[in-house]
Length: 209
Image 1 (cartoon, rainbow, N blue to C red):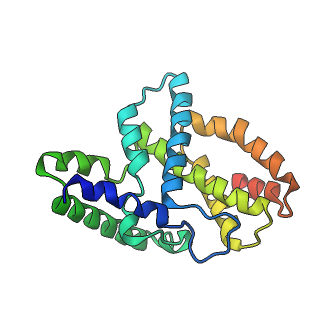
Image 2 (cartoon, rainbow, N blue to C red):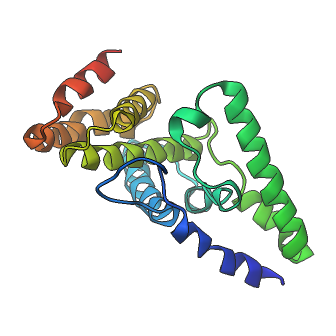
């Protein structure tokens, strides 16, 4: 079917709901998540460049726009499950990578296969772009959880999602992380003060851990 199969498959990302099986005031699809990650990453990369850090923008757009493409094949696994152990996380990643590789081999014309392998690979690594992707991905988890907590969702999973994503972000050595912690997160906490859930305390405990 050629590249048409790839274009057609993108619609599936609109149907995959993140954090399945839990009550949510607002559902978010994988496609919506990917779009937001790109927006976060653009601003995060701008902050890095403002500090003199070179950014490969083509690589950044490729890895941010396609970082969850493999979920077309296995869906969105609950965060506590896929992070239960490094072994399980590694196995799930291997399954995703094999299925993406099989899809490319079966559907993508030979002359474009190297491009698709590069674009649809796991983009989180120790490069500046890979770290920005990691921060942007966790940032969207923070905002998804924040919205639910702000609306009074008492599901423990959203507290854990917010807390764990914040802990992960603060461990990443980037200028944009410093900016987020100093200038963006305080605004979130201030806005969250109207929530029936103590977001300020959850935030403080995460930053102190």
